[in-house]
Length: 167
Image (cartoon, rainbow, N blue to C red; front, side, top):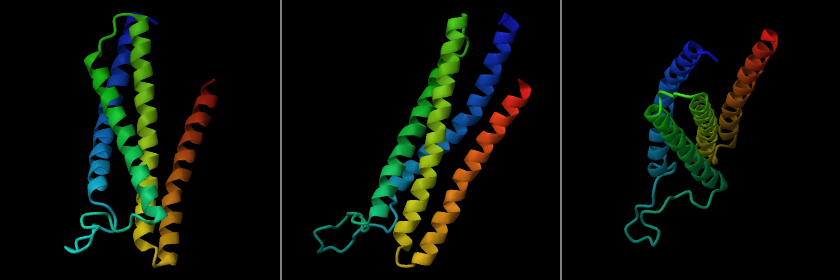
């Protein structure tokens, strides 16, 4: 790779990373807030031994919400950190440093995809936990939420198909 090609590649990666950083930061913010504003709320009866505890703690869907929200938070925080490291080392001088930058970008992108997937699951399970008394509505929300995964698969399919057509 020539010096000009390398410079162009770095600019492309860094421009994409800026956009990804905004999305990852939003995901960190949303998942952090969701961790403290739990679906179903908190027990607020003064005389209850569970005062301040989440009301839906015993529901499986609620537990799935908490776990997937935590996964989304950690993955998006990891992506933000990765983009921060990229920004600190944004001028690779050797081919090896360029490979490192590209690998960090790949890791950050994978973390962000995992975070987006976990956020969708957290959304679905959070709504399911609060709507469990209305099974039809809860099931409808689950079905609609699962459409996002079909969209992800479609996008990956189109990317792969486009890559196959270029070769």
